[in-house]
Structure formats: structure tokens, C-alpha cells
Amino acid sequence: MNWFEVKNVEELDSPSLLIYKERVESNISKMIDITADNDRLMPHIKTNKMENVVKMMIEKGLYQFKCATVAEAELAAKAGAKKALIAHQLVGPKIDRLIRLTEKYPEVQFASLVDDWATVQLTNSKFEKAGKKALIYIDINSGMDRSGHALGQSLADLIAEIGYLDHVQLYGFHVYDGHIRADDFTERKTAIESGFAAVKAFIEKYKLDNEEFHVIAGGTPAFTSHASEIERICSPGTCVLWDWGYGDKFAEQPFEYAAVVLSRVISKPAQGIIATDMGHKAVSSENPIHTRIRFLNLENYELLSQSEEHGVIRVDNWDDIKVGDVLYGVPFHVCPTVNLYDEAYVISENESKEIWNVEGRKRRISL
Image (cartoon, rainbow, N blue to C red; front, side, top):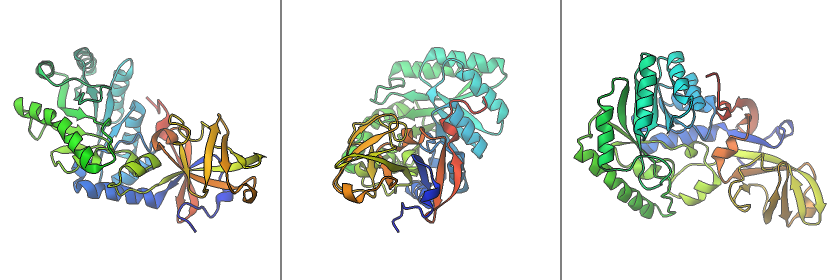
């Protein structure tokens, strides 16, 4: 039996998300081995969005997590995390939600990103009214131009101004370099370190290099590069579940597929053509049609089109395929694929034994 096949697959509806428990555990262990220091790991839970997966990481000794939303921060707290960083600059009602989160989970250290003086002032004001102190990291734009403050004198001025406020505390920098994705590790690491040199120079110039000042660096593409620099905290996320997109691209990373989309053949409308129940709602579809899913038990095929509920595939072995046949596929991009599902079947020893909720796909859990 292949690793992805499920003995009691006839009990599983489709399309559905399968999580392979032993492989998740193995990926967590490999992630820990790469840094060899749990204090240097802050995994991003935007990939898995599941309380049970976060609990698995906590059981391995991890205690701090990066999150994309207030809901994910609450999920981390519910799972037992000691620290949760919301890797966004909070706008609208989100600062108030964060304050309520600190009140509900006083034992958890929550933090958020800032890159704008007005946001820092608003955060300080709101936390002052609540009688609390906000923990913040400055988001640094290291070349991705997606968010963050540029290095230079204005950043030094921002840091100085923060120092005069009583209800915000600066913990360090957040530096995300997800735009650097060369296939070759040596080329990728050279580019990452070249971009990071200015960050290091700024820290040294303004004497920010101390035990209280933390630098959270990169995501999964840069993980194996930043992990070799002991002063940096790493925040990979995809590696816990892994996917086809990163698996083909980052050969030096030892992770294995732990999330699979289960679908079924629902029609054979024409010679050489099959239709499945794997539409846009079953697998992330932001990439071109040929880079959305890789079927593990189908050869010589081409995904021709997708609509909301259908995936149409050209196959060579049309005569051998029956309506109702099961297909197992690895998503090209696992993070938004997981976000499509309310729950996942958990596979252990090739059998579905339990169902886990994907709590983090909600924008609000309780606050």
C-alpha cells in the first residue's frame, strides 16, 4: 500500500483534506533539528490553521508562534502557546480585539507588527486606556515592497520616538524576505544574506544588538539560510505540511508531503476526459491551471479546467478509470488549500481515525 492510500477511504466524503499524522510529526521534528534550538523557532500557523497541529508542536517543545490573524493568535493561545505574534500591522478594530485577547489569555505574550508612527501612537493610546502595555516588532522592508519600514534615519527616529511612550514596548525587528526564491540553495542564501547585510549594519550602528532585541527572519523559502545564523529567530510555516510548489523548488529542505486532497471521478463525459469533484473550492487555484495539484495515483494526465465544483482532466488510461474512483493529490500551494476546509480527516497508519477542525480559517473565533 502506498503511503497516501487510506484503507477505509469508502467512509470519506470528497472533496476533502487529508492530514497524515505521522508525517506531520516527522516534519515538526525535522524543523526542530534544523535550528537545534527551540527558542529560535517561531512557526507560522497560517499554513495548518489547526489547534491539534499547534498542540503537536507544543508537545515537541515549541512555545512561540507567528500568526496571520487575530483569530489565529487566539487559536495559538487556546492550544497552549506562550507567545503569539500577529505578523500584520493592526488596523480598524483589530487593536481592540488584541486588547480583549490579552485580557482573555493573560498568561500568553501577544505581539503585533508596526511600521507606521500613527499606528504606534494609536496602539499606545488604546493600550493606555486599557491599562496595559503593547508588545511590538517593527516590520522591516528588506526589498519585498509588500509591507514594512525602510532602513535609514527615519527608522532610527521611529525607534527613538517609541522609546518615549509608556504603553508600547519594542521587542525587535520582523524581516520577511519571501521574494527571494532561487531554486539553488547557494544562490538563494547569497541573495538572502546580501539583503540582510543592511539590517545587520543598522542594528550594529544603533547598538540594538542585545538579548532583549529579537530579529524574526524569513519564512519557509529562507528557513535553511536563516537557521544557520544563530542570532535570528526563524518562522517557517509550510514545512509542517509541505507542498508540491516548495517540494520541487527547495531541494535542500528534507520535509515530506503531509496534506493531500482527496477527490473522486464523477463523470466520463467524452473519450479521454474525466470530471472530478475537485473544483476551485477544493484546491487553491491562484496559480496557472498546470500548477494547482499533482495527483499521486494518476499518470499521463493534464488538468484542463476547473469550475467551482468540477475539475476536468485529460487522461491516457480512460478505459481503466471508473466513475467513483478515488484520486489523491498534493496541492501546489497548501496554505490557501487548507483554508478552503472546515475540517480534515486525520490519517494514521493508512487509516482515517479522527477528524480535526480547521479553526483558524475563521476570521473570528470568539473575539
